[in-house]
Length: 113
Length: 111
Image 1 (cartoon, one colour):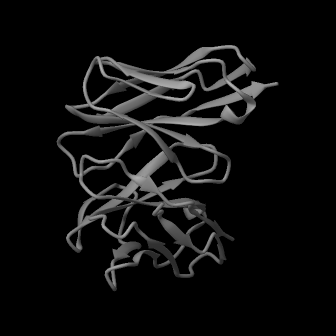
Image 2: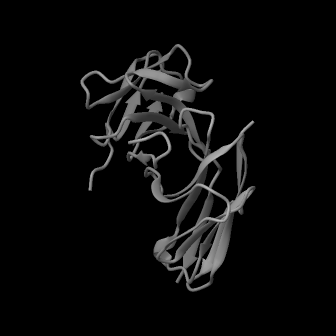
């Protein structure tokens, strides 16, 4: 059964460093999302991506964040200058249609020291 | 503002003791309501999608129902392997597909 994959599973970085989180969505899906979950808190929407452009972003998704689909299979989230409060689980999700089920990856645990 | 509230926050059941989890929502036009299961340190795993009031979906010991203001996840004769956090999320018809999640209900089923 196709699944969303994410790498790395755990990333440790120093404050101020850049990180890139990678996702491989399910192959025939068209809509892509990033969410994050701070320990003990709700899953929060970050950004949605369709047709090679951002379709919606949350207040969390400021100028330090960017997304890219560089090669038609990978979907990346970049944080330019990490802050302590960026420590969280980051989930990628994909879906074939805007109304369809979103399938989530296993997540990347980002720890900022 | 679109919002989802789940109750209770935590629920402990004995194996075989049936119960229900609640998800109350306010949204500007519901496109869909989604239930996910999340194990510790893992990503949300899809369970059900409900689109309109009165709709019901079933899978093994789980049954999800939907009204205009809330959804219930009924667990019949739970087993220890049903222990997990159950997440409810809504999608508004006006947006680009983003899901708005509740806090979740953490279920523990004791043998």
